[in-house]
Structures are given as structure tokens and as C-alpha cells.
Length: 500
Image 1 (cartoon, rainbow, N blue to C red):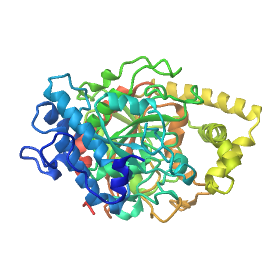
Image 2 (image 1 turned 180 degrees about the horizontal axis):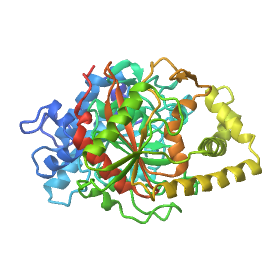
Image 3 (image 1 turned 90 degrees about the horizontal axis):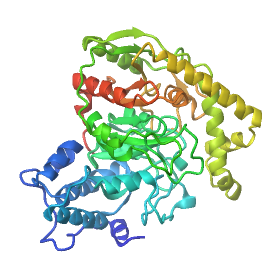
Image 4 (image 1 turned 180 degrees about the vertical axis):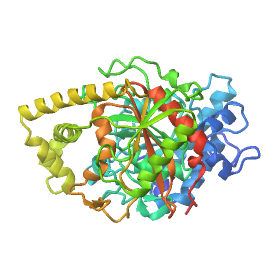
């Protein structure tokens, strides 16, 4: 463990970085609250102009973490001295007049399933509670090269399985808008940290909704890119397309900024797309009046709570007011359930079967059942799943010849009590497994579409509700532009939680 981590575990504050004249203070006229509540693009502009230093920005965020994180439990490994050393190096680079990378000086806590060289990465399991990887994985490698400053790791469910963030290493992450509620998952720590201003950007991953569900629960933005948009490495099953990595932020423009750094081809990923990441650094402002927008409150019959339905209905009305052609319609998601469940179980067994064999009593029940389900699959089962997967892709592809984007619920219910492992009922219909309530997200995963969770409003009790904007395969930029237009028209993202 690094010295910075050991000092944090003792509750000590970060001291000055090398060569500094004293402890970091807020920037020129900007107090801690101002620096923590700026968007990432605003912070990047202030840093580039020399109006604030990287040490001032990182110091402000470390103090926000100290004040807020004990109640929320979003950041689970904190590296204050390490972060301040990096910030000092970033300031020295700027003082020498060097070219500044796009994320220069921005603090980042990485998802605790993303390997970080020399920094504890637990995957939310006691089996890896002291695991310190030797190498960064590709998404972390790109963010560090892009100038991001690593301050720690964000909480996840065990092996990122499930869309509620709790584990036996660190406990649950709580929703900043209501500490008695779930922050979602599996990128729940990242979403809660963003909502609280503990970091301006966050990385995540998404198989069944893990970038989108927590964004919906915490009133931030989460983007599931098209498979291959953000290449993954190292990866044992490099041809698989169900799980992706991607960006989260408090605004759509900031989400696109992070995407611009982590996207782009890499020869280590056989499915990586050739479009350069810099494509997503451009302005998202566009005339969206020509968009053809479809919307569905229930993806053709799923149980969905009324506040979620209302958010989708309101979103459809907003796009109508923006001049778009708006129709109630939905692709045929027949077979998406079988495709997702089969391929997910197969991948879980391939990746974690050995872990279960070696530690049968140390893996949570629902995850163990998924692994065992994968073990029981036959060649015929996998062949059928891939055939259905192909048919689903073509049905969705043809649907998007008629429409540009599709509006859907992100999650089928609002944030549920943090003590629950998973909701057992949605809109009066029983949920039989910990995956059932996530269908509105994972059916989209099975279709291979890019999908954005963008703040869509609040319940009468003040709980956030997201709206899912889905596009045709590889139409990531169209989705981001539609999300940006919706965000600018509604300003739901501007409502921040009352900090603990």
C-alpha cells in the first residue's frame, strides 16, 4: 500500500506537494465550493488560462471528499499525497510552457473494477481486498495520458454484478439525494461522487446498465458507447460486445469530453472502432429540429413505475417543442431477454468460474447462480443465442432507418431503499432475480446500441429520474447531440443534492 493510502486510513489530510510554499488553498477568487461545482470543461478552461492551479483544484476536491464521503461512501480508496504530487507535476508542466492535455489537472477516482498500477483494486470482493495491480488497464492509461490526476477508486458491487452498489469490503454507497436510498450500480460510487462534486468526471463500465442506472438514480449523465468505441485491454474475451466501458459526468458536454480521451482505435482490441476520440471534443450544439424521435414508456410491455413513465412522456414533449417529429413507437425486443441472459451467464462463467470453484462460500449467492447457469449452457444454447442476437440487431437496425433516436426509461423504478439487495416488485409485478428490474437497460445492451442516461426530472419526493436516449449502432454522436439539446432545454442536471 502506498504511503498516501496509509495516511488517509489514519484520517490525515494531504500535506503540501514537493516544492510548495504551504497547503493548497482555493484559487484566485474561487472558493472550494466553486471549484468543486464547476463543470469539467469550465475547470479545464480555468486551468489552461492559469486562473487556478492543479494543486488548488485537487486540494478543493480532496476537502470536499473529506467533508462528504463519510456519509455517502462513494470513494473507497483515497490517495491524497499521490494526487497532490501529480498536481504539482501538472503545474510544473504548465509553468514550463508545455502543451496541456485535455484533462490537465482534473481529479479522477477510477471505478474499483478498473485496474490501476500500484493502487488497490478490490473488485468489491474480500478475495481481492489487498489486490494491487502492476499495470493500468487501457481506459485508465488513456485518462492518465490525457492529464487526469488519480485521487482514488470508486465503490462497486461484488465483481460489478448487479445495479446496486454494496459489498462486503466497503459496504453500500448511498444516494446523495436521499441517504436511505440506493445510488444504483455497478458504477454507483462514480455516480454518487459526481453528484456530490467529489470529482468532475468519472469512468465506468456497462453490461446491463451499469453506466446508465446509477446516472439515473443520482441525476448525472452516463453514456454506454457502441461496442468498440472505447476499446478494452487487457481482455480475455476480446470479441465479446455485451460489456463496454465509458464516461460519466454532470453534463452531456463533459461526458463527451471524457469520451474524446478514452475513445479511439487500439490494435490490442479486435473490435475497436476507427473513429478518433477527438471527434467527440467538438461542440455538441446542433439544430435538432430535423430529428425523428420515437418514444416508448415501457419497451413494449415492461412494468414501469409511474414517475418513470411521466419522465419519458415529458421528454417526448420537450423534443416536440424543439421541433422534432415525435411518435410513440418501439423496436421489437423479442429475444433480447434470452440473448442477454445467455451471453451474460456464459461470460460470467468464463471469467469467474475458477473463482467460484476455489472459493465456493466467498461469492455472493446471485453471482454464484449466474456462474452456475453459464456452466450449464450447451453449444446449442450459445448458437441459438447468437442467432437471436443477430436477428435482434437487424430488427433494431431497420427501426433506426425510420428514426434517429429512441426515448426510453433508464430504470423501471426510482431509487429503492439502500438496505435491499434488489427490488422484488416493480409497479405491482414480482421480480424473481436481481436482474429482472434492469430490463429497460439491458435489452438495449443486447441490441448493441449507444445509449445515454440524462437527467429527466424528479419525483414529488425529490428522487432523481433519468431518461434513456438510444441511437442506432455506432450513432454515438447523434445520441450525445440529442442529449445535449434535451439538457439545455430542461436544466434538470442543474439541481444538485443538499450535501451531507
